[in-house]
Image 1 (cartoon, rainbow, N blue to C red):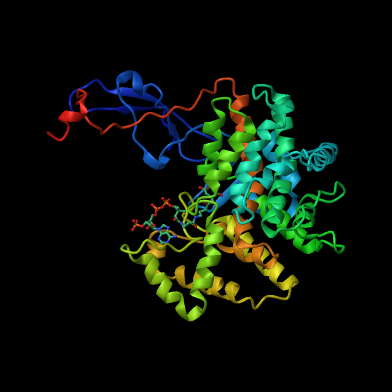
Image 2 (cartoon, protein in one colour; image 1 turned 180 degrees about the horizontal axis):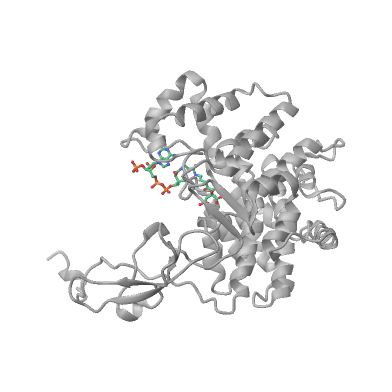
Length: 433
Ligand code: SDX
């Protein structure tokens, strides 16, 4: 059936119908343009934005029923196999795969922007050593707004690209420094000659006391994990960055807001929660008990790493995370890792259970990532920090796309008011009379 050109809203009280334009996208549901509704005295009501397209974007596309994810039209399964993270970062930012010279120049720019202003080391010192790395990342990334003024003109395209290079270069350094600070170990400076994922592992795990060689298999696995987490349409944290950025706010403060949203256990914090859940299950024999808890409406427990607002089929990223998990465990001779065994069995049982089948609940990107990170020696408190490191590329690409659109406006949702009717002030001595 062809896309309709308009939708006609009729009312059962005889009010005149309202005609609203309908637009088709490249893929995905047609959209009904409701912008004219408020002129007729109506608003739409959609808490959680289950049926709302908040913007037009060409950066990524998810087909939840088919379990498909494209970055600028390229299937995630091709990018994760053939591309590297900085190539994908260029693609998300500029819309095309980079030419060799573009890729070399961009990689060089990002590498040479990996070091932080040395004064920022003092910002870390303000935190308790046991602060959660995400608390430190949110704080330090926000503090970048007090340091990098060469990229604060958000309405200038070149300035926005400089912002992107600063963030893509420096967020891994902030993440690694958050870990070192938490561990009480000295900060490790980036090495410009290292690759992106290689440099991150170097900053995380090398110490002044011995030489540290990055395992190239693990670095490649981490680079793929960064690609899988880079962008994902208008998820909660990306929508946070867009709304904050729509006012023209400082970009580093906007990215810090995105990190804060991602930290939530229902969003990017799920990978840490998955590992805690697998450890609590402890043995495959206890899986049925936890499946029953997840199905019990009286019990707030949910199977962490399962379900998704859009994917009603396997999250394509989860399949690659499972494969990467197996490769890393094999490289490290940990294929009998008990948590991996429990995860595989939990997935198998859940996918056969009517409750999960009826609700189309499948493993999502967070289900296996925690096991991989743990095998890489990364503590659970750093899992979301790594998700934030990778998603920074998507956030800054979406922020840039929004501000490059001259028709963009400050985001200002309305509400459905259900509060008190108008009433007069009651002096204190008459209250409760
Ligand atoms: C990410 O948006 C993105 O793109 C996010 C992300 C990205 O890349 O940015 O993909 C990253 O956030 C992945 C999701 C990580 N979160 C988790 O794994 C936490 C566990 N999953 C959920 O809490 C839940 O599935 C959500 C939050 C992911 C989705 O929530 P929705 O879309 O609001 O779904 P829902 O809560 O309306 O659930 C529908 C039904 C409910 O049952 P009924 O009321 O219909 O009987 O499914 C049930 C829910 O109770 N359900 C689950 C469940 N997830 C949903 N039941 C048990 N375990 C679960 N995990």
